[in-house]
Image (cartoon, rainbow, N blue to C red; front, side, top):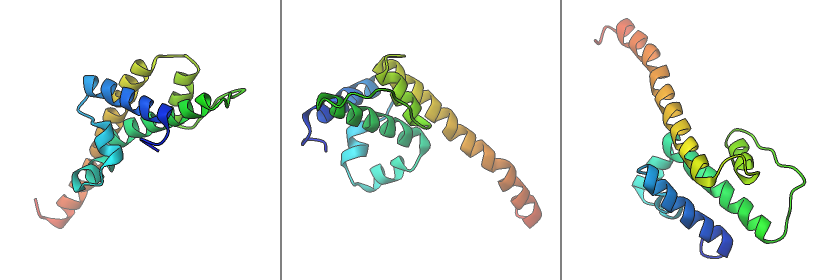
Length: 128
């Protein structure tokens, strides 16, 4: 879709610029490249969620540009944040900052959640 749909492309470019100001996330690299590094990074919550948010936002903006006007908006998980952003609850920049922090905390929680299990396995195996 990038490079084919003008509004989608423009919104991805804007999201990429905003993300680069507030994080080390290179949106276009993660969306458009199939390098091993990009594939591995996109598997991590801290990268996947901002990419999904930006993609959903850009795609929704493309639909709006085509004249599709929703009577209401709702979503699930990241979709809720996209809907809130589109409804004007917060700006795109605020939304991206929020999602970057949310994703960072979720990634941290996933890592921390594994430690108790890992320690139990390690202690039981006697390999510590």
